[in-house]
Image 1 (cartoon, one colour):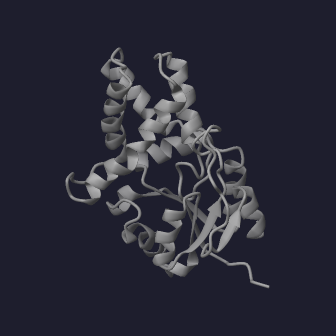
Image 2 (cartoon, rainbow, N blue to C red):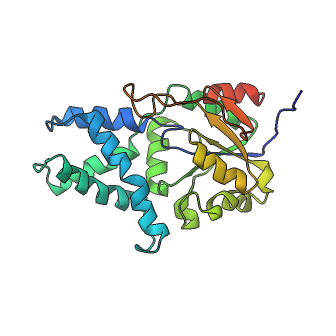
Length: 234
């Protein structure tokens, strides 16, 4: 029987793992009555996320926070959907929907339980202000906020994963990345971190359920963050 791992630090991916970006954005866009599908708008906005970060990774753009990258993508998506009636103040408010994302139903309870025995923090490409505002609104009880902004590198750059270990002066194998994305987890494992996969089948909405079957290599595979707390004895 395999023994339960004992990580000191639990670092969480945020968008999709801890918070429901798709549902939150779709609801807010629908409430604005822009004449577009909130579901489609949310998916299009998220689709621009990785290409925008790649412009920073490649050096095409200097270091740029996610808030600014989200705004660049928002302008493109508004144009794509033919939405032209939002002024700058309304665009700025909509862009900050990423600060207002709702947690999945198990997230706050799960992180709260895990905090009793582990140090818990985000490891997100979101910037510090975004993650702080999100945590305050959602009641996420992080011990501290770690972000790509701290390391000035976006995941999957090794500086982000190894930066967590360095911040807390522990070995990489004493850090566990908790995420709903196998590419993120694979990059963390390559840096020597433990990994826990969290099932989020509805990350992209009910019309596009994700395959959440287990993959080899992950230290743990859990249906929720509460289930992860149970596995780790919290």
